[in-house]
Length: 164
Image 1: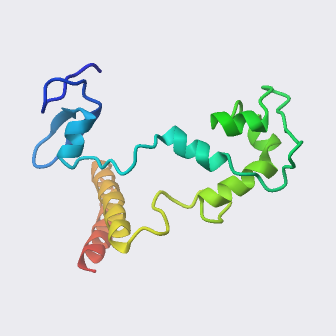
Image 2 (image 1 turned 90 degrees about the vertical axis):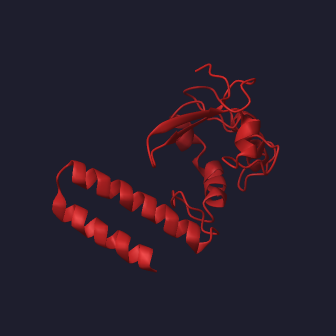
């Protein structure tokens, strides 16, 4: 999509926003205008790739200095994964399991499986808002499917959460 920023009308829009309330409308902003309007926050200049690279470059427990695991299917080595940040094929998860497990645990605060989208350290207000968004989405789906029993139960959960 090659759209100019609706605010400055000079730079290509990279932030696309769909507002549904009070009416449905789309907005297209460049990154700088989105920051000025408070739509996005620029906390740090680091890109996602830089953050991931920093996360992956730490020594992996159980992998000795001379060791370099390699996947027989795609030929990717673990060192290559550490530098690129991407696995080569689905078999890499099995081949690199022992080396990946500490990374996964560190990413999920010592859990070895996905623990949700909201970080543990997030404050309770953010957790409550995330829960409300999920419940409202469930309510909308239940009403669209005309499942009024589920809709009533979800409505009650929303009311309960909003009153706390």
